[in-house]
Length: 236
Image (cartoon, rainbow, N blue to C red; front, side, top):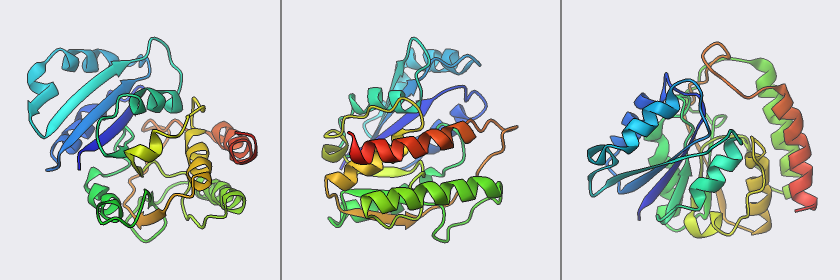
């Protein structure tokens, strides 16, 4: 199967080159679809230069990179919506542009799909993988959002807010993503539940970063996520 790796990017100049190096080094047939969401810190210029180098964009038959640019900042969900519309692979993985998630975990995520058990796989930060110890209240907020989402979708996920979500392409292409920001996580969870997809969770590692290191999600996004959990369960 060909893997489509979707990377939404906003102001990740310090990490984007290393992340692309890690993704490109994986020995798997893949396409990397990058959407720059109007970065202002030099990321956009770096990606533009990359987009002009044919040797980088398709260095061999197993590693294709395609880069798209938003004319204005819209949010993670909007960037993923753009990327999903360009998917040509059979399996899709979402990858943040920071270094919090390790692409070496892809093979764990892909296994239940490759062997025919799953339509969707979530990579959980709370199932025993190594993780950096950081913010207690982020952990509490995540548990509240995941519990509420589980109550409304009748799923038993341990980490609804994880970045690492892996889909059969036919599944994610059925879903009309409306969220522009971090509402993507509860929205797509509610919608794969409505589609009665076979959902698996696998443990992943997590190297979280601090706000000083560039973390972007805030308590406002947590409050918004509560609204999204309810909205996409009952009204969309």
